[in-house]
Image 1 (cartoon, rainbow, N blue to C red):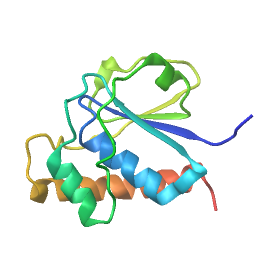
Image 2 (cartoon, rainbow, N blue to C red):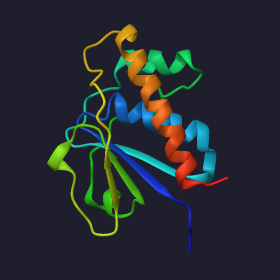
Image 3 (cartoon, rainbow, N blue to C red):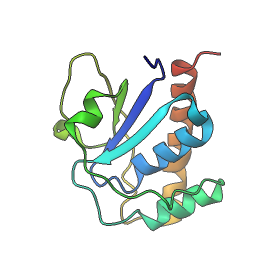
Length: 134
């Protein structure tokens, strides 16, 4: 049985914040943490400003695509981090739910997305330190 932690990032469109978080966690934690993201109402494509902001720090998220949130994805996660999906996220006992209050990058240019990206990175670094103690 695997003891590898699993993190699911959830936001409404799964096109900006959750994709940036998935990109950072995958980049910084490697295979030590299973990482997924989903949306309660997935968009058609990734937010171009989020893609550009991540590329600026050397992380390519262009292979990702918005995905629908499923009960199975939630139930099989160690930690579920919501970013504005509110009550759309199903509840399962034993799953650690956290809500990260982050500005929505939808419709914003890369200049406005950079501070959101940097805040996500800071939170991801703390999450890694918690889930994979040195």
